[in-house]
Amino acid sequence: MKNKIILILAVIVGLAAAGGIYTFLDGLKRTYVANGDFVKVVTARQRIPARTQVTPQMIELKEIPSRYINERAAVDINEVTGKIVKSDILPGEQVLRDKLAKDKEDSDGLSFVLQPGKRAVTVAVNQVSGIAGLIKPGDRVDVFGTFDLQGQNQEKASINSLLIQNVDVLSIDQSAIQSTDSQNAKKTTVSASEHTITLQVTPEQAQPLILCSEKGTIRLGLRPATDQDIIALPSLRANQLVH
Image (cartoon, rainbow, N blue to C red; front, side):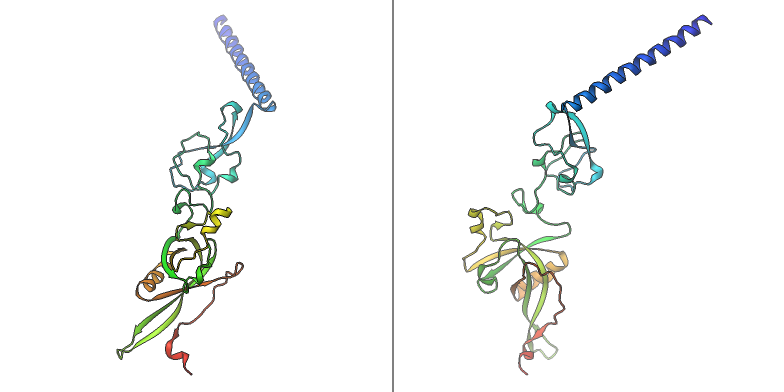
């Protein structure tokens, strides 16, 4: 009986000691946090592979002693959510800003600029079809195509059709959408008579664009900055020009 009482007392003393240590450490942590020794940073809950879009389930805010925080670590969930990871991030690792692809910049590759489900397609244009080189990265354009269609009577008819509408211009020649300063801005205005334009399109839009650029001719139509309406425009045959 006496041994049982001693055992119970030992357990109680042990629990009390453990509770006291926990309370002390928790109070110490709160003191450090209050004194600014702990800072909340974004860390990975799981392994985030390269070229993965970050979701809220993959990350969390965690309090870390300030002396262990990387100066490039993100401190806000919103600045990480939705971004594309350029290299692997391990569980518990701080999410560094330079491991995230920046919006509308291709310094890490054009693939980081593309929206999900879109493709980059490059077409050749000249001064006329490319609107005299006045199109810049970030503009939106419609693409018209002209091609010959052979009818049942073996006669060819020239047809013009609105192939795709309201697509983003990613780059002009080698000048991409990241050009913002005065020096780079000069590169976006193309003066050459022959150049290329890279458009952001869906796979369904890419097919007629590529086919017509290979077998016919295309011409770009620059859209107003605020116009994103999709219009219904029937194809036009050459004989319709004569009434």
